[in-house]
Amino acid sequence: MPQKKAVIIGAGIAGIASAIRLAVKGYAVEVFEANSYPGGKLSEIELNGYRFDAGPSLLTMPHYIDELFRLAGKNPANYFLYEQLDIVCRYFYEDGTRINAYADTGKFAREMETQTGEPAASIVKHLANSRDIYSITNHVFLERSLHRLQTYIRWDTMRSIFKFPKIDPFRTMHRANAHSFKDARVVQFFDRYATYNGSDPYQAPATLNVIPHLEHHFGAYFPEGGMYSITQSLVTLAEGLGVKFHYDTYVDEVVVINGNAKGIRAKGQNIIADLVVSNMDVWFTYKKLLAKYPGIHPKKTLKQERSSSALIFYWGIKKSFPQLDLHNIFFSADYRAEFDHIWQQRTIYTDPTVYVNISSKHQPDDAPACCENWFVMINVPADNGQDWDKLIADARTSIQLKLSRILGEDIASLIVCETILDPRGIESKTSSYKGSIYGTSSNNQFAAFLRHANRSSKVQGLYFCGGSVHPGGGIPLCLLSAKIVSEMLPGQ
Image (cartoon, rainbow, N blue to C red):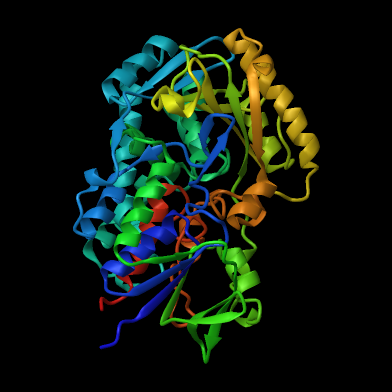
């Protein structure tokens, strides 16, 4: 039997993982990437002696990365190393409260009780509930396609369906958290997890309370060499399996003949293939690559509300701050107002919650001696034509004032270099429609079922992976999307 060929559009983390899985299955795989580098959002920036991970900065569930190496018969430790964090994140509140979110559940619960007065037992109970939601949803909502009959005729699926009320889909995340805790600071702490997939805790279902389990059970990690080492190690693995990467190569269209995907067109040439996997945002896949075939466009899916986006300042700081850790959160004093500005007014609140990631805390070479590389991010709405230049200028001022006040330093005077990524740049660099980081939002109890499937129902041989399709955004879910795609295909 001649070797079948697979073409993958986009070298994001899901595209690379799909390439590895299909190569292991015996396919000849070629990946076409518009940028000059792999990784998509999982890339890096170098500026004046400072190195920054450009996108995702928190690593959870690294076993999904290790799985790819083992699948290829390789020892993951020969390619990719990481260390577990004792403190997942440090939290700073406007009233002066400081919380270390320890990875260890007992230690974390005691910290919360000490700092807020919320009983440790309440924290432990909440995390146990998070674990239960995970156990019910994981094998159904995350690891399998929701768009195939086979998923629903399995015993473990039926068991999860019987337990459906326990995943708490009909209350909002905020309402559930406010019911669980008396202290507003603790409620805000757990509400923040909605932002992990670009959603609003005041609208999103309480099912998203599954997310804390990923940190407090599986742990949080830092990869040796920074987050970009994930991309580098997986590309090395893929190339070792014979995968060919084509950079600086825009794909113009998916070639469809008699309802079958037969390859792509790029640089004026047709590249013939037996199947096509798009790691491009599903909106752009249809609107650009399948523009000739409006009849196959899933109109309702493409009109869904997009997730939030991000505004990121990459700052080279000429000082070291011992009170800061790898991950740091500076909370807004009024969380509801912040989310109202993002989701209702489509703008940026004057007191946004600020996330500061400093990889040089664990990777000293990422900044000059006695300096730090600050990845400073706030959640912002998707791009709907706002005056981003003004919003960015105002946000920079608000962020600097907030950090200066809390840290007792004039932050603006310590910035020696800066570059910025906003929703417009996210769209142009990663083909993420409107700059939304996670595709569609999860501000709906049926969001998991409304995400685009991993396989086209109208074009044979066309598949989808990445954060804009099932099961969602973020590194673990993107890796799972690649796994779902590969399990739909026979080996060679």
